[in-house]
Each structure stands twice: as C-alpha cells, then as structure tokens.
Image 1: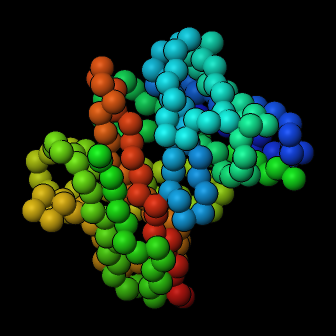
Image 2 (image 1 turned 135 degrees about the vertical axis):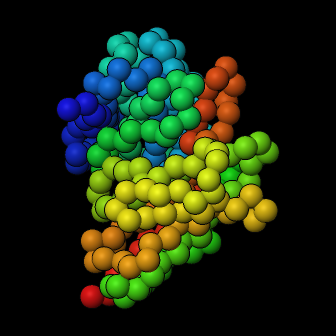
Length: 113
Length: 116
C-alpha cells in the first residue's frame, strides 16, 4: 500500500546536537511538506518542496534545514540553532496543482533534553 | 492573509449526542476547505473536503460539513457521537503560493472528549 513513512516515531537528543528526521513516500507525489505541531498551536509549515533539488521556506524555517535529493525522500534536520526543538513533527505529501489535500505520515516526536 | 479560526479549543459531549465543531475562514477567493482528524500521537486523516457545488458534504466515519459562504464557515457535524470519535479535529483551507502551488493553512484544532 502507498503511504508516507516517518522514522523514528520517538527521538531523544541532547541540547546542542543536530538531529535528522526521516520522511519517505511511495505515492509518487511531487510535493512534500514538513509541519511542526505544538499543543494549542495547530500545524505550522516549516519547509516544502515541489520538485527534486528545490525547496522553499515555510512560516517557521529558522533553525531547520531540508534536502530533496530524491522524489521519495524529504529529510528534515533540526539544528542546534532551533531554540525550542521539542515538538511533534509531521511530514505530508500531495500532487502539485491538485487541491485535494495532503497525505500525512504518523509523525515523529522529538524531545531535546 | 488567509486564515482559519476554530473558536472552541475543547469540547466535551456524551456518547450518542450530536456534535458540531465550528470553523471560520478568511480567504479572498473560492476556498477549498478540509477537515482532518488526529488521534493522539498519530498523523492527520482526511475526513472530508469541499471544493464547489453542494454545500453539504459527506465524509468518512459518519461526519458531514456545511459550507456557508455568507458566514465564512465550514462547520463539522455528526448526528450521534461514538466514544471512538474522541480526537483532535483540524479545519484547513488551502492558500495559493504561486505557480500553481497551494499549501494548507490549519486552524489550531478542537479537542473532542466523549463521555461514556
């Protein structure tokens, strides 16, 4: 079955360390997205990509970086510059130009101690 | 700027009671509207979507939503709530970012608790 896989589900890191969250999809979607979710804040867009080797900043990109070397993969790196990295991170994908909503992964909960 | 408001942070209903979750949007053009549901620690699942046509749309799990342009609302309803409906619900509107690209803007969510 097609879908989006995020790994790991839980991630613990020490403050000051960079950490990379994985997102892989086999839906043949061109567009991929990273959202951050905090209690009571809804979902906020970090980065998105519509094509391989190209990506754009979302609303809260500071302290994050991404790459899109393959259509299927869109990893997110939370850098030490992110002041408040503990959160639930969601990856999503969609077909470009089709306004039919997104398919979401099951998320990664990152805790920085 | 496009935005989505969900006025209710938390709603509690008894099992078997009816449910209405409110969503108001701000959008300059014809909106594409969505409702998603999220169980704790999980991703979001699409419940239903509205593009055009009939203003009452049916979704999965017995949910429906009504689009009211005059009120800029897209409220989610269910006639009889089941305990398994306890979750967080997000309303979303897509917004144009140019070059045929659209991104979803989400409300802050409404958490639904169900009393047995």
